[in-house]
Each structure stands twice: as C-alpha cells, then as structure tokens.
Image (cartoon, rainbow, N blue to C red):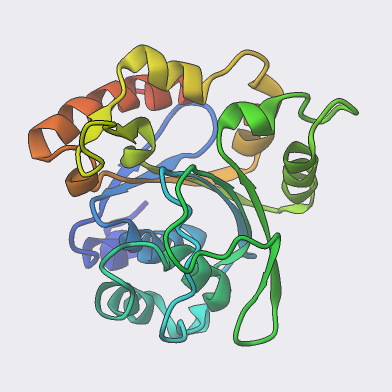
Length: 256
C-alpha cells in the first residue's frame, strides 16, 4: 500500500499494523487497550460491507456503550476519537459500539467471564433499531465440535450460519484469553504455557471451523492489555507464546 493510502493509519497512535503472508488475513493490528480495536476495524474494513467478528477473550466484552457510537460514515478520525475518549477504560464496550457504528454485523464470542452489564441474549438491538446476532461459547472446542455437521451443538450451528452468510470476517484476540485467575488470589492472573494455548486454539477437529473463519478473514486485531496479563514482563512472555501458536501454527506466517 502506498504511503498516501497508509497515512490515516499512521495517525492511529498506539496501533501497529503488520502485513501477513500466510493463511487467512493479510493485515494484523497490534495494540494494548482493547477498545482500540474499534479504529483498527474501521481502518481494515474501509467502505466495504460490515463484517462478522470472531473474537477470543477472557471476558465477554458485550457491555453496551454509554454514548452512541458515531456511524462509520463519520470517518476513521471520529471513530478513533470516540474509542479513546468515550468508550469505557475497562475495555468492555467496544464490540457493541462497533456493531452500532455499522462496522460489524454480528459477533461470535469465545470467552469465559461476564462483566457486569454484559449482554447475554443471542440478539442485541442497537439504538438505531438494528438487530445483531451474538453467538457465545466458552471455548473454541465448543464451537468447533461437529462444525458444519448434524452433530454440531447449538452454538456451533449458529456460528456456522453467521459465517456462511458473512461477506467478510474479522478475527480478534485479547491476550488475556490465555490467562486464568489464581485460586489463591483472584486479582492475580496465571499465564498459560504454550501447550495449553495450543490446546485451546487448535483443539482436535477444529480444522473446518478455522477454515470457515480464515477463508473470509480480512484482518486480525490483537490486544495485549498487559495489566490483565500479569504485567509488562509477564505479558511479553505470554505474547511470545501466543504468537508462536496464533501466527506460526494457525496462520502459517512469520511471528512478529
């Protein structure tokens, strides 16, 4: 892409854009606060049709935003400013904001913890009266088991329908997906070793699910959020292990 075309992205402080050469998306966006996914999605999706979001997180970031999100027609700068100044610093309302802005059509969410106020229903209607499908599961395995076959469970079947009708997909990962609260101290998180990350991301039989996701995936967004991952140093070590599996094994591309 030319420098002129890249200029808007270069204004997005704290977001690093990477070109990928492997399977699936050709662009990745790295940042720390997860709410910066909103301008990253705006940049990645441009003026094309709204995308289906497939997001992996420790938390169901499905809390409605307090302020109405500007429409995508307002432009990248408006959405970037909204994410930084209007979205909650707890980073749990960016998904529904992106649905309301018209960037995303529906969402498939893999997560385990529900923040207070998170939407748990399978559909959410935004301020404009537009309904969006929300498919949720606690693990990739629950979505991938029997995917595309009569043996699939409800969440897997609903995810398959959303993936089939979606024109584009955005894959989103929060690094804290690969952590668990300590039983001794719930405010202390325990990073997962690489083998556990691999078992979670690539459970047996998950090939058809990932084929469906990556076949339409136009971008990957990756939030690091070190405060939720044991701090900067622990987060860096976890990021390295997660990247080895996500980029190296799932996407088959160079590890950043």
